[in-house]
Image 1 (cartoon, rainbow, N blue to C red):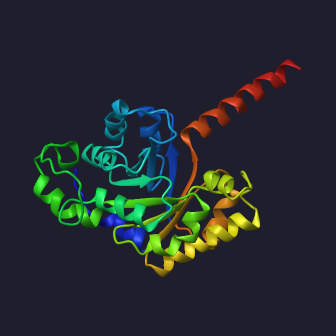
Image 2 (cartoon, one colour):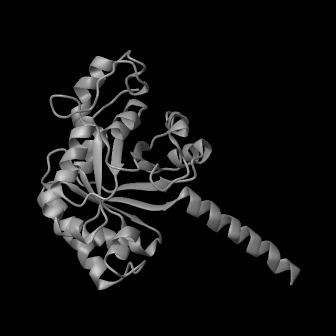
Length: 257
């Protein structure tokens, strides 16, 4: 599998890039999503049901897909970045980044020396099991995408400093956590949330980075786009399955009345 800087260039060029979250832990739904027309998909290992034993199968399912595979790790630890990237992820999302120091640690974990501290092994899936490691190593610094999640009041306050960290590509708002931390749970149209989102998006733009966000309802997509977000995910495989099954059940029950 070739590692090229095309997707990261599109991210930093603030092109409109659409995605979705995959939290069921299923390689089947990952494969379906990867072929559905998204620019990128997020394999969720923070809140999702997948474990490390399933990650390689999920990434294999995306091999023939057009969507770029991003993995959200559960915590900002260097070993988790290394594992996801060695298995073939093309980017990493790290949750709860609230300070520039935390962002810098994530940036170091993503990159090989001399740019970072990612451990070097020639034989791994990301480099075609070693066949293309030299090319992979040369391309990795410019091709791998780092998304840092802004989910706290502190993170919003530090958005400018986080965006200025070399290696951070996307400031990605986690809307549920952020609204809870702002004291306005799930109020995505609340002025305080929208103002926080605006601050994050503007901080990213001023630093030449991109702003990203997950939205749960289609009407919010336009609002986030208007605020300057360009890396935008809508919904999840779990949400789609649950909503679809409830719809089927309701349609069937309607005939029994």
